[in-house]
Image (cartoon, rainbow, N blue to C red; front, side, top):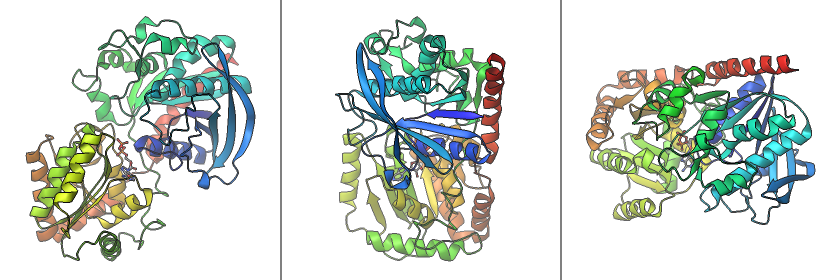
Length: 481
Ligand code: ADP
């Protein structure tokens, strides 16, 4: 089969969060199974091309459109771990992908609509059928609308489109004019249910794709109810027969404490105590923390409302009260949240039991997973969550709120600690039990770690579920010739 992914992120080249890890992990597993896998993403100026050994121009001048105007683009090609990558360099006068960041520009909608339209233009002009066009989140949701309304009638052959919801909160709402700029007329069914004067790109993806997935079974249930559905629960309900929650995996060769190049010391289940101690030593050295016979709790997270930053703060304070140490690795796009955490850092300046790092840093994230004894994930909602899966693989016990994918992967007293409500009481309840177990029940602690180590968090099982979806499409393509 030939699977073509359209995505705004792809690890490790262009990553903001879990979306990047998931597209990379699923694509790699699909390629390993012998399928042809292609991924197209924008060639951002921030893109880390050092990973690409054979990067070259494949299509020097691909013409695409913005309103009535022709636009020039260069398509770059590279292979990466068995995956064919296509990178779209736009020569649009607005320099859509030269902004020093992936998201957070006032014209994000226009940038990603342009990317999506140009990607379909690429698929159309290269005249090669694909079995599945796999779309990820709002930035590329419009592809299924464009395909059905514009490119299918022109003759583009795609077996089927699958749309994966990684996070329903971000939907991409725009006025009609923006859609008109890529040649689409008014679509009443794309009208946003909350702001009816706007069109909703994600809703378009949900309505026009042949199959919809989301990244865990519990999140799939949550978003078909008014409380979790962000206004789109009834749209999803209508699609129930072609909607499935498939749990994410992680790429287990990339996240592997036995081979991880970013660690100060690599380790297995057999020698994890020594391995963790050496990595902890490295963290303490870097951040000026003292040596202490106490657990190190971490948070590795975007500091946005979804992740309950106030509860992360509370967990930090409680961990210190309980005699532990804490490292926070997190970036806050909202200046107010950023300020709040920097004030906390200032308040705790000189405290040898706490460390803050407010940037995105891939290698430090690896080291932190390896050095920590526990991770706190108190999310308000969590479509799947990867940090608890990565943690388990590194022998780090997850303390999570029971929601979405966290509820599907962390089980009380088996591989971690859970709490029901996203409030300080809940966090306290989990932390107090975790610290008590760490200090007073070493055998139980070791058992938790062992279960984490032994859990299959790979893509193996989940990829099978995606293959079944792709296979239906492949049959469609054969039928239509
Ligand atoms: P989300 O996609 O909502 O951010 P996930 O748990 O699905 O949450 O994925 C988060 C990913 O981002 C993980 O791979 C995690 O290690 C990584 N991450 C989060 N914050 C940072 C940071 N400051 N530096 C490096 N990696 C980070």
